[in-house]
Image 1 (spheres, rainbow, N blue to C red):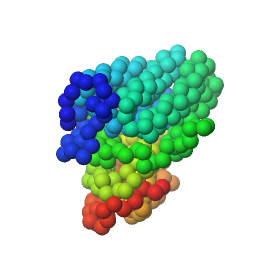
Image 2 (cartoon, rainbow, N blue to C red):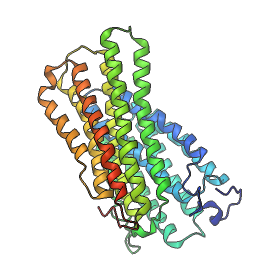
Image 3 (cartoon, rainbow, N blue to C red):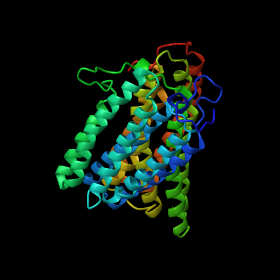
Length: 405
Protein backbone atom coordinates (compact mmCIF):
# COMPACT_ATOMS: atom_id res chain seq x y z
CA UNK A 1 0.00 0.00 0.00
CA UNK A 2 1.33 3.40 -0.89
CA UNK A 3 2.67 5.42 2.05
CA UNK A 4 2.19 9.13 1.90
CA UNK A 5 1.85 12.08 4.20
CA UNK A 6 -0.12 14.15 1.71
CA UNK A 7 -3.58 15.44 2.58
CA UNK A 8 -5.26 15.49 -0.85
CA UNK A 9 -8.44 13.49 -1.15
CA UNK A 10 -6.94 11.14 -3.72
CA UNK A 11 -4.04 10.30 -1.40
CA UNK A 12 -6.37 9.74 1.53
CA UNK A 13 -8.23 7.02 -0.38
CA UNK A 14 -7.27 3.35 -0.35
CA UNK A 15 -5.75 2.10 -3.60
CA UNK A 16 -7.81 -0.40 -5.59
CA UNK A 17 -6.78 -3.39 -7.62
CA UNK A 18 -3.27 -3.89 -6.24
CA UNK A 19 -2.01 -7.08 -4.64
CA UNK A 20 -2.23 -5.50 -1.18
CA UNK A 21 -5.32 -3.32 -1.74
CA UNK A 22 -7.36 -5.42 0.68
CA UNK A 23 -4.64 -5.78 3.30
CA UNK A 24 -5.54 -4.93 6.89
CA UNK A 25 -3.07 -2.43 8.32
CA UNK A 26 -1.42 -2.42 11.75
CA UNK A 27 -3.30 0.72 12.80
CA UNK A 28 -6.58 -1.13 12.17
CA UNK A 29 -5.40 -3.97 14.40
CA UNK A 30 -4.35 -1.43 17.03
CA UNK A 31 -7.78 0.21 16.77
CA UNK A 32 -9.42 -3.19 17.38
CA UNK A 33 -7.88 -3.41 20.86
CA UNK A 34 -10.54 -1.01 22.13
CA UNK A 35 -13.18 -3.51 21.05
CA UNK A 36 -11.40 -6.37 22.81
CA UNK A 37 -12.08 -4.37 25.97
CA UNK A 38 -15.66 -3.64 24.87
CA UNK A 39 -16.50 -7.32 24.34
CA UNK A 40 -15.06 -8.15 27.77
CA UNK A 41 -17.19 -5.43 29.33
CA UNK A 42 -20.31 -6.75 27.62
CA UNK A 43 -19.93 -10.34 28.84
CA UNK A 44 -19.05 -9.31 32.39
CA UNK A 45 -21.97 -6.88 32.50
CA UNK A 46 -24.42 -9.70 31.79
CA UNK A 47 -22.85 -11.84 34.53
CA UNK A 48 -23.30 -9.01 37.01
CA UNK A 49 -26.88 -8.28 35.90
CA UNK A 50 -28.12 -11.76 35.09
CA UNK A 51 -31.79 -11.07 34.49
CA UNK A 52 -34.22 -10.42 31.66
CA UNK A 53 -33.62 -6.70 32.03
CA UNK A 54 -29.87 -7.29 31.95
CA UNK A 55 -30.24 -9.36 28.77
CA UNK A 56 -32.23 -6.57 27.09
CA UNK A 57 -29.58 -4.05 28.07
CA UNK A 58 -26.84 -6.37 26.80
CA UNK A 59 -28.60 -6.75 23.45
CA UNK A 60 -28.88 -2.99 22.99
CA UNK A 61 -25.29 -2.29 24.01
CA UNK A 62 -23.94 -5.12 21.83
CA UNK A 63 -25.82 -3.70 18.84
CA UNK A 64 -24.30 -0.28 19.50
CA UNK A 65 -20.74 -1.58 19.86
CA UNK A 66 -21.03 -3.68 16.71
CA UNK A 67 -22.48 -0.77 14.72
CA UNK A 68 -19.66 1.56 15.72
CA UNK A 69 -17.07 -1.01 14.66
CA UNK A 70 -18.67 -2.11 11.37
CA UNK A 71 -19.34 1.45 10.21
CA UNK A 72 -15.67 2.24 10.84
CA UNK A 73 -14.67 -0.82 8.80
CA UNK A 74 -16.83 0.45 5.93
CA UNK A 75 -15.15 3.86 6.08
CA UNK A 76 -11.63 2.40 6.19
CA UNK A 77 -12.52 0.22 3.21
CA UNK A 78 -12.24 3.46 1.20
CA UNK A 79 -9.80 5.48 3.31
CA UNK A 80 -6.06 4.84 3.32
CA UNK A 81 -5.03 3.99 6.90
CA UNK A 82 -1.36 4.54 6.05
CA UNK A 83 -1.85 8.31 5.77
CA UNK A 84 -1.35 10.52 8.81
CA UNK A 85 -4.84 12.10 8.82
CA UNK A 86 -6.59 8.71 8.72
CA UNK A 87 -4.28 7.27 11.38
CA UNK A 88 -4.96 10.30 13.57
CA UNK A 89 -8.69 9.85 13.07
CA UNK A 90 -8.50 6.20 14.14
CA UNK A 91 -6.51 7.10 17.26
CA UNK A 92 -9.10 9.75 18.16
CA UNK A 93 -11.80 7.11 17.70
CA UNK A 94 -9.90 4.81 20.05
CA UNK A 95 -10.10 7.46 22.75
CA UNK A 96 -13.85 7.86 22.26
CA UNK A 97 -14.19 4.08 22.08
CA UNK A 98 -12.42 3.66 25.42
CA UNK A 99 -14.95 6.00 27.02
CA UNK A 100 -17.78 4.01 25.41
CA UNK A 101 -16.32 0.70 26.60
CA UNK A 102 -15.54 1.95 30.10
CA UNK A 103 -19.09 3.22 30.58
CA UNK A 104 -20.78 -0.04 29.48
CA UNK A 105 -21.26 -1.49 33.01
CA UNK A 106 -23.05 1.68 34.15
CA UNK A 107 -24.58 2.65 30.81
CA UNK A 108 -28.05 2.25 32.32
CA UNK A 109 -26.93 3.87 35.54
CA UNK A 110 -24.82 6.94 36.24
CA UNK A 111 -22.65 6.37 33.14
CA UNK A 112 -25.45 6.84 30.61
CA UNK A 113 -24.54 10.35 29.51
CA UNK A 114 -20.87 9.40 29.07
CA UNK A 115 -21.89 6.46 26.89
CA UNK A 116 -24.35 8.49 24.80
CA UNK A 117 -22.03 11.44 24.19
CA UNK A 118 -18.94 9.30 23.47
CA UNK A 119 -20.86 6.99 21.13
CA UNK A 120 -22.32 9.94 19.21
CA UNK A 121 -18.92 11.59 18.97
CA UNK A 122 -17.48 8.32 17.66
CA UNK A 123 -20.11 7.84 14.95
CA UNK A 124 -20.61 11.44 13.87
CA UNK A 125 -16.93 12.38 14.12
CA UNK A 126 -15.76 9.49 11.95
CA UNK A 127 -18.39 10.18 9.30
CA UNK A 128 -17.69 13.92 9.23
CA UNK A 129 -13.99 13.16 8.76
CA UNK A 130 -14.82 10.81 5.89
CA UNK A 131 -16.90 13.52 4.17
CA UNK A 132 -13.91 15.86 4.48
CA UNK A 133 -11.47 13.21 3.24
CA UNK A 134 -13.64 12.62 0.14
CA UNK A 135 -14.00 16.33 -0.67
CA UNK A 136 -12.33 15.88 -4.06
CA UNK A 137 -13.15 12.20 -4.41
CA UNK A 138 -15.99 10.44 -6.25
CA UNK A 139 -19.07 12.65 -5.96
CA UNK A 140 -21.54 9.80 -5.40
CA UNK A 141 -19.42 8.29 -2.65
CA UNK A 142 -19.06 11.64 -0.87
CA UNK A 143 -22.81 12.27 -1.08
CA UNK A 144 -23.32 8.80 0.37
CA UNK A 145 -21.35 9.80 3.46
CA UNK A 146 -23.22 13.09 3.68
CA UNK A 147 -26.40 11.02 3.87
CA UNK A 148 -24.85 8.78 6.53
CA UNK A 149 -23.80 11.86 8.50
CA UNK A 150 -27.39 13.14 8.50
CA UNK A 151 -28.78 9.80 9.76
CA UNK A 152 -26.14 9.44 12.47
CA UNK A 153 -26.66 13.03 13.59
CA UNK A 154 -30.36 12.28 13.98
CA UNK A 155 -29.69 9.12 15.99
CA UNK A 156 -27.15 11.07 18.06
CA UNK A 157 -29.94 13.27 19.37
CA UNK A 158 -31.60 10.16 20.77
CA UNK A 159 -28.35 8.79 22.20
CA UNK A 160 -27.58 12.00 24.09
CA UNK A 161 -31.21 12.51 25.14
CA UNK A 162 -31.26 8.95 26.44
CA UNK A 163 -28.10 9.60 28.42
CA UNK A 164 -29.87 12.48 30.13
CA UNK A 165 -33.03 10.45 30.77
CA UNK A 166 -33.58 7.73 33.34
CA UNK A 167 -34.91 4.19 33.60
CA UNK A 168 -37.38 3.16 30.89
CA UNK A 169 -37.05 6.48 29.05
CA UNK A 170 -33.36 5.82 28.48
CA UNK A 171 -34.09 2.37 27.11
CA UNK A 172 -36.80 3.73 24.81
CA UNK A 173 -34.68 6.59 23.47
CA UNK A 174 -31.67 4.39 22.88
CA UNK A 175 -33.81 1.75 21.22
CA UNK A 176 -35.14 4.46 18.87
CA UNK A 177 -31.55 5.51 18.11
CA UNK A 178 -30.66 1.95 17.16
CA UNK A 179 -33.74 1.59 14.95
CA UNK A 180 -32.69 4.75 13.08
CA UNK A 181 -29.15 3.46 12.61
CA UNK A 182 -30.04 -0.10 11.69
CA UNK A 183 -32.70 0.72 9.10
CA UNK A 184 -30.64 3.41 7.38
CA UNK A 185 -28.43 1.12 5.23
CA UNK A 186 -31.44 -0.89 4.03
CA UNK A 187 -33.01 2.42 2.93
CA UNK A 188 -29.84 3.51 1.15
CA UNK A 189 -29.57 6.37 3.67
CA UNK A 190 -32.48 8.07 1.91
CA UNK A 191 -32.90 11.81 2.46
CA UNK A 192 -35.65 14.15 1.22
CA UNK A 193 -34.70 15.86 -2.06
CA UNK A 194 -31.38 13.98 -2.09
CA UNK A 195 -32.65 10.44 -2.58
CA UNK A 196 -30.89 7.21 -1.67
CA UNK A 197 -27.52 5.64 -2.42
CA UNK A 198 -27.59 2.66 -4.83
CA UNK A 199 -25.51 -0.30 -3.69
CA UNK A 200 -23.28 -0.01 -6.77
CA UNK A 201 -21.74 3.05 -5.11
CA UNK A 202 -20.57 0.84 -2.24
CA UNK A 203 -17.79 -0.69 -4.35
CA UNK A 204 -16.12 -2.28 -1.36
CA UNK A 205 -12.85 -4.14 -1.46
CA UNK A 206 -14.33 -7.55 -0.71
CA UNK A 207 -11.21 -9.18 0.69
CA UNK A 208 -10.72 -6.31 3.14
CA UNK A 209 -14.31 -6.45 4.38
CA UNK A 210 -14.14 -10.23 4.77
CA UNK A 211 -10.88 -10.09 6.70
CA UNK A 212 -12.05 -7.26 8.96
CA UNK A 213 -15.22 -9.11 9.97
CA UNK A 214 -13.21 -12.27 10.55
CA UNK A 215 -10.93 -10.33 12.88
CA UNK A 216 -13.88 -9.18 14.95
CA UNK A 217 -15.04 -12.78 15.28
CA UNK A 218 -11.53 -13.57 16.54
CA UNK A 219 -11.89 -10.74 19.08
CA UNK A 220 -15.14 -12.24 20.34
CA UNK A 221 -13.73 -15.79 20.43
CA UNK A 222 -10.72 -14.41 22.28
CA UNK A 223 -13.06 -13.36 25.06
CA UNK A 224 -14.17 -16.98 25.44
CA UNK A 225 -10.53 -18.09 25.69
CA UNK A 226 -9.74 -15.35 28.23
CA UNK A 227 -12.78 -16.22 30.35
CA UNK A 228 -11.96 -19.93 30.26
CA UNK A 229 -8.30 -19.45 31.14
CA UNK A 230 -8.79 -16.75 33.80
CA UNK A 231 -11.60 -18.60 35.57
CA UNK A 232 -9.82 -21.96 35.39
CA UNK A 233 -6.64 -20.47 36.88
CA UNK A 234 -8.52 -19.32 40.01
CA UNK A 235 -10.16 -22.68 40.75
CA UNK A 236 -8.99 -25.88 42.39
CA UNK A 237 -8.49 -28.45 39.63
CA UNK A 238 -11.13 -31.01 40.53
CA UNK A 239 -12.47 -33.57 38.02
CA UNK A 240 -15.59 -31.44 37.49
CA UNK A 241 -13.56 -28.28 36.85
CA UNK A 242 -11.24 -30.14 34.45
CA UNK A 243 -14.26 -31.50 32.57
CA UNK A 244 -15.79 -28.03 32.35
CA UNK A 245 -12.46 -26.63 31.12
CA UNK A 246 -12.25 -29.25 28.37
CA UNK A 247 -15.86 -28.71 27.29
CA UNK A 248 -15.46 -24.91 27.18
CA UNK A 249 -12.33 -25.18 25.07
CA UNK A 250 -13.90 -27.73 22.71
CA UNK A 251 -16.92 -25.50 22.15
CA UNK A 252 -14.75 -22.49 21.33
CA UNK A 253 -12.66 -24.53 18.87
CA UNK A 254 -15.83 -25.78 17.17
CA UNK A 255 -17.12 -22.21 16.83
CA UNK A 256 -13.80 -21.19 15.31
CA UNK A 257 -13.94 -24.02 12.79
CA UNK A 258 -17.55 -23.29 11.82
CA UNK A 259 -16.75 -19.71 10.91
CA UNK A 260 -13.20 -19.82 9.58
CA UNK A 261 -13.25 -23.23 7.90
CA UNK A 262 -16.74 -22.84 6.43
CA UNK A 263 -18.55 -19.50 6.55
CA UNK A 264 -15.59 -17.18 6.09
CA UNK A 265 -14.18 -19.16 3.16
CA UNK A 266 -17.51 -19.19 1.36
CA UNK A 267 -18.10 -15.49 2.07
CA UNK A 268 -14.66 -14.43 0.83
CA UNK A 269 -15.02 -16.52 -2.32
CA UNK A 270 -18.51 -15.26 -3.16
CA UNK A 271 -17.94 -11.57 -2.47
CA UNK A 272 -14.77 -11.69 -4.59
CA UNK A 273 -16.83 -13.06 -7.52
CA UNK A 274 -19.94 -10.93 -6.97
CA UNK A 275 -21.07 -8.33 -9.49
CA UNK A 276 -22.52 -6.27 -6.60
CA UNK A 277 -20.15 -6.63 -3.62
CA UNK A 278 -21.73 -3.65 -1.86
CA UNK A 279 -25.04 -5.48 -1.56
CA UNK A 280 -23.30 -8.59 -0.20
CA UNK A 281 -21.30 -6.52 2.29
CA UNK A 282 -24.42 -4.68 3.48
CA UNK A 283 -26.68 -7.69 3.92
CA UNK A 284 -24.23 -10.45 4.85
CA UNK A 285 -21.39 -8.79 6.71
CA UNK A 286 -23.05 -5.73 8.23
CA UNK A 287 -26.15 -7.39 9.67
CA UNK A 288 -25.66 -11.14 10.14
CA UNK A 289 -22.31 -10.88 11.92
CA UNK A 290 -24.07 -9.17 14.81
CA UNK A 291 -25.73 -12.53 15.57
CA UNK A 292 -22.36 -14.28 15.51
CA UNK A 293 -20.84 -11.79 17.96
CA UNK A 294 -23.87 -11.92 20.28
CA UNK A 295 -23.77 -15.72 20.24
CA UNK A 296 -20.09 -15.80 21.18
CA UNK A 297 -20.60 -13.31 24.03
CA UNK A 298 -23.42 -15.43 25.47
CA UNK A 299 -21.25 -18.54 25.10
CA UNK A 300 -18.45 -16.81 27.05
CA UNK A 301 -20.92 -16.11 29.86
CA UNK A 302 -21.98 -19.78 29.81
CA UNK A 303 -18.34 -20.92 29.93
CA UNK A 304 -17.60 -18.83 33.01
CA UNK A 305 -20.68 -20.20 34.75
CA UNK A 306 -19.78 -23.76 33.73
CA UNK A 307 -16.29 -23.53 35.23
CA UNK A 308 -17.61 -22.00 38.45
CA UNK A 309 -20.42 -24.61 38.86
CA UNK A 310 -19.52 -27.65 36.69
CA UNK A 311 -21.69 -30.18 38.51
CA UNK A 312 -24.44 -27.81 39.57
CA UNK A 313 -28.01 -27.86 38.39
CA UNK A 314 -29.55 -25.54 35.84
CA UNK A 315 -32.29 -22.98 36.00
CA UNK A 316 -34.17 -21.77 32.94
CA UNK A 317 -32.09 -18.61 32.54
CA UNK A 318 -28.72 -20.35 32.45
CA UNK A 319 -30.03 -23.14 30.21
CA UNK A 320 -31.25 -20.45 27.81
CA UNK A 321 -27.76 -18.91 27.74
CA UNK A 322 -26.00 -22.26 27.21
CA UNK A 323 -28.25 -23.18 24.29
CA UNK A 324 -29.04 -19.66 23.07
CA UNK A 325 -25.44 -18.56 22.49
CA UNK A 326 -24.60 -21.38 20.03
CA UNK A 327 -28.09 -21.09 18.48
CA UNK A 328 -27.57 -17.39 17.72
CA UNK A 329 -24.13 -18.20 16.35
CA UNK A 330 -25.43 -20.92 14.04
CA UNK A 331 -28.36 -18.76 12.95
CA UNK A 332 -25.99 -15.95 12.00
CA UNK A 333 -23.83 -18.34 10.00
CA UNK A 334 -26.90 -19.84 8.32
CA UNK A 335 -28.32 -16.44 7.30
CA UNK A 336 -24.91 -15.39 6.02
CA UNK A 337 -24.70 -18.47 3.79
CA UNK A 338 -28.26 -17.93 2.61
CA UNK A 339 -27.46 -14.35 1.55
CA UNK A 340 -24.15 -14.96 -0.19
CA UNK A 341 -24.71 -18.43 -1.66
CA UNK A 342 -28.51 -18.68 -1.80
CA UNK A 343 -28.53 -21.97 0.14
CA UNK A 344 -29.79 -23.23 3.50
CA UNK A 345 -26.78 -25.28 4.67
CA UNK A 346 -27.84 -28.63 6.11
CA UNK A 347 -25.04 -28.74 8.74
CA UNK A 348 -26.25 -25.49 10.32
CA UNK A 349 -29.87 -26.62 10.19
CA UNK A 350 -28.87 -29.86 11.93
CA UNK A 351 -27.09 -27.89 14.65
CA UNK A 352 -30.10 -25.66 15.30
CA UNK A 353 -32.44 -28.65 15.44
CA UNK A 354 -30.09 -30.48 17.81
CA UNK A 355 -30.02 -27.52 20.18
CA UNK A 356 -33.82 -27.24 20.01
CA UNK A 357 -34.12 -30.95 20.85
CA UNK A 358 -31.97 -30.46 23.96
CA UNK A 359 -34.10 -27.59 25.29
CA UNK A 360 -36.93 -29.65 26.87
CA UNK A 361 -34.42 -31.76 28.84
CA UNK A 362 -31.99 -28.98 29.80
CA UNK A 363 -33.22 -28.50 33.37
CA UNK A 364 -32.81 -32.23 34.08
CA UNK A 365 -29.06 -32.25 33.39
CA UNK A 366 -25.99 -31.03 35.25
CA UNK A 367 -24.55 -27.97 33.58
CA UNK A 368 -21.47 -29.89 32.38
CA UNK A 369 -23.67 -32.47 30.60
CA UNK A 370 -25.72 -29.88 28.74
CA UNK A 371 -22.59 -27.95 27.82
CA UNK A 372 -20.90 -31.12 26.57
CA UNK A 373 -23.86 -32.04 24.36
CA UNK A 374 -23.95 -28.48 23.00
CA UNK A 375 -20.23 -28.60 22.21
CA UNK A 376 -20.72 -32.00 20.52
CA UNK A 377 -23.44 -30.58 18.28
CA UNK A 378 -21.14 -27.71 17.28
CA UNK A 379 -18.29 -30.14 16.59
CA UNK A 380 -20.50 -32.22 14.27
CA UNK A 381 -21.53 -29.06 12.40
CA UNK A 382 -17.89 -28.01 12.02
CA UNK A 383 -16.83 -31.36 10.54
CA UNK A 384 -19.86 -31.82 8.29
CA UNK A 385 -19.79 -28.23 7.11
CA UNK A 386 -16.21 -28.39 5.84
CA UNK A 387 -17.06 -30.63 2.88
CA UNK A 388 -20.24 -28.64 2.25
CA UNK A 389 -18.34 -25.34 1.91
CA UNK A 390 -15.79 -26.79 -0.50
CA UNK A 391 -18.57 -27.88 -2.86
CA UNK A 392 -20.08 -24.37 -2.76
CA UNK A 393 -16.81 -22.64 -3.56
CA UNK A 394 -16.11 -24.97 -6.50
CA UNK A 395 -19.41 -24.15 -8.21
CA UNK A 396 -19.63 -20.35 -7.89
CA UNK A 397 -19.66 -18.69 -11.35
CA UNK A 398 -17.47 -15.64 -11.86
CA UNK A 399 -19.37 -12.34 -11.76
CA UNK A 400 -22.52 -13.89 -10.32
CA UNK A 401 -24.83 -11.33 -8.70
CA UNK A 402 -24.88 -12.98 -5.28
CA UNK A 403 -26.27 -11.44 -2.18
CA UNK A 404 -29.63 -10.27 -3.44
CA UNK A 405 -31.23 -10.36 -0.02
